[in-house]
Image (cartoon, rainbow, N blue to C red; front, side):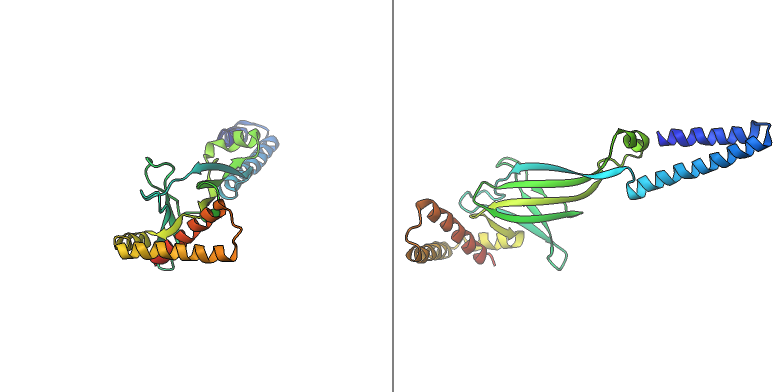
Length: 226
């Protein structure tokens, strides 16, 4: 719409300045037309550069997750470090056991890990630009910047028994677990820590013990992968 408006004002300014015989009127048409053209161009720049007429809109989606590895006894969430600092990570996840492995986008994205006693899930909050109302959408819609990505926040809700490992750590863990002695030590460590805790808290329920055992196993697995 704003392009049409610009063309119409330009044509009126041109024909009014050229074909109107009254010079005083012709000059006023040119002046007003030039001001309007500059104003329209300024609005176009403001919309394209500063998102004039737009506001941030958050789109939230929730997806169930399954472990990226095939073992149900040692579920994992994996990540791949980017760069030398290790601060930037790409997380690998699956939405079902038969689905392909997906990964997060490192561009304009922040990832959070939240431990939970519920099922694994990914809550993705995507912030995009959206027009404030129909007027601005009609005026600037041709620019195609509606839905432009601002920021995505991924919240991984990870159960207590899930290990969070890098892809390198996962490979090292797989090698270590091929050793029967390592497997035995892992089981003994978990049993010992659970026994010590039960001696201090003998009133723990079976459900609490299962949650704690899963947590201890995850900690032992992560330590073995170091």
